[in-house]
Image (cartoon, rainbow, N blue to C red; front, side, top):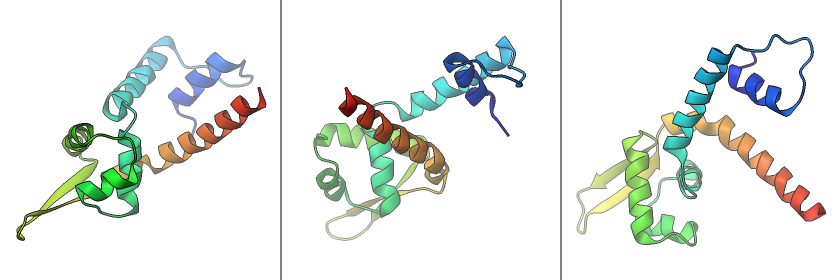
Length: 132
């Protein structure tokens, strides 16, 4: 099934033959959904953090080593945002000292297709830029 978002985006990019285009209201609703998604996933680090934690659960310092260039303050804020949106879980283990492990939730795995498509587009874009 073709979603309204895809049809609206394709309609902007090229003429689509033999497909009934969505109404203005349907496109507006689809745009609102995209805006909501971008609000949750905004910024340069959130998707990288999700990918990092989908691979395996990690401690704060392990995440910071894996994602080079992110400051501790930004990392802490991004982890809090992701936790608030149920994309990661923060597990506190009562050891001495206290051990905190971050892990991806099942809900974050619903982004698998989005991340795959975004990765494919990023590769395609990189190649296009290299051509010029």
